[in-house]
Amino acid sequence: MAIFAFDASHSLGKVRAVDTRRVNVQVNTDEDLRKARVGQLVALSLPGAIEEWLIGIIEKVIKTPVLDEQEVLPENSETEEVAAVLPRESVLNTVQLTLVGTVGLTIDNRPRFSRSLVQVPEIDGTCHILRDAQLQAFMNLLSAEGRTDHSLEIGRYTIDENAKAYLDGNKLFQRHASLLGSTGSGKSWTVASVLEQASKLPSANLIVFDLHGEYRELSYARRLRIPGPEELGKTDTSLLFLPYWLLNAEELQAMFIDRSEFSAHNQVMAFQDTVVAEKKKTLEGLKKTEVLNAFTLDSPIPFQISNVLKELERLNTEMVPGSGGKDKQGPFYGQFSRLLVRLNSKVSDKRYGFLFQAPDGEHRYDAMAEMVKRLMDYSEDKAQIKVIDFSEVPADVLPVIVGLVARIIYQVQFWTDRDKRRPMALVCDEAHLYLPKKDGKNPVEQRAIENFEKIAKEGRKYGVALLIVSQRPSDVSSTILSQCNNVIALRLSNGDDQATVKRLMPESLEGLMDTLPILDIGEALVVGDAVLLPSRIRIHPPSEKPLSATVDFWDEWSKKPELPDFAKAVENMRRQNRA
Image 1 (cartoon, rainbow, N blue to C red):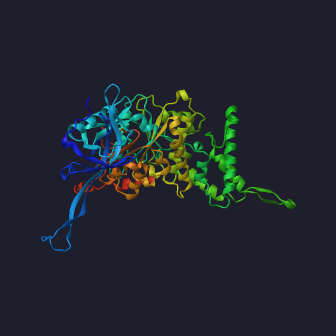
Image 2: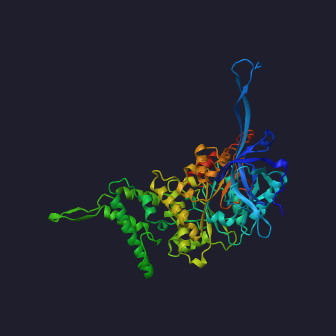
Image 3: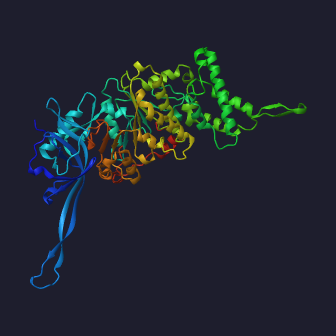
């Protein structure tokens, strides 16, 4: 069975230079050179193999003028005049390409594409353009191999709109993935397209960290939201309170303690000791002997923050017996004044009500298990996709809160019995807002980054995957991005962002990355373990689009004016609620 049937119309030229994955092809005529297009696929013959071909992607098409010297003799050869030397121009046509895989026949005589390169082409080996029927045959082969029980249809190949493009659903999440693109490039609908297909699987389990409420209207998803000031005290199954006792020691300190203060070390010590004592009191009251013998400062055990405040106030004003029968200031006198101001401010501020003003039911010992079930359960209707709306969370604590949710999910997954553990994925939308680069960042951001870096490095062992979504990849932690072995890159216009994405790619594919600024809306470069061939793919739009459509300014300005209710908007701002 012949894989390809090439004739003279497909001929491009012969191999002139080989450097591992890079190949230079010398093209004989200008007519043949016009067949070559950047991004086009070619097939190169392998030495000694009849039905085995190397597949490459064209990176550069070069036409180089070359000046040769030609000696012109004088008309009268009998004279002794010096011959005239005139330049003669010739042309060197070259195509540079990168090898991406091999097509050959299996034992049962069926064509198969592999990304491995067992051999490289020999010098003077023939090179053919894949187009028309030959291109269609190859793309059909790719589609057929990609279409498996665990495949995810992502779109269609740009070079052949008839060929469906599939991702390996296992490898996409096993090795983490990043979805990167400028505003308006199609990130949200790409996320929605993946969610839509995953929602049809009986036990899919994806949690979307939604910072702007873009995915709240998806009919197949369960919506959870961090409550705003207006919703405190309400009992609604969609509200996700995160009581303060869920925070570990580092997260608590990041929120309350200013490390630059002279008394910071005393504040840390006293705060930790008081919290441990309160947690111990809770466990003793519940007679949780086993937990009491093993718990630590980081253990998520309910305690009363009001008791912590009272104890710190007592230490801050404590007088102890001194010499001569007179009292003197205690060892911590006056050292916790600023800490107490910060604590009282945060505890009473309704913006942080989801932490410090949660209903009494959220402070029960069993409350955490119930909350985790709402986050991680996939068995009920619309539970395969959970969207957590963080839009009401104040920006100054956003990294800690997002990191807290991710850490709880990861730790519960870690401590779940191995045979009962089910894989899950965290979709981190707008990741640059809470996973920035470490360079001198504040402690609040540092805590979130550390939580996610741990998941990026170790999560796949315990069935926790990351899908990092960002419009500013240059601002995202490089440690986290470097763990993403699959990259879906939509249009990127910023030079720093383009450079960041290029660093994530194999060196041999840098030429392909040069197309990042000219991609169409909804078109992506997909590279990684989940795709058979690094390709430009036009992403399928989802049936249900997220609430992220870009406003058409000129069209809106062209309509008759209709004033909004400014008084209502001001009132919404005052009560922190749009309802």
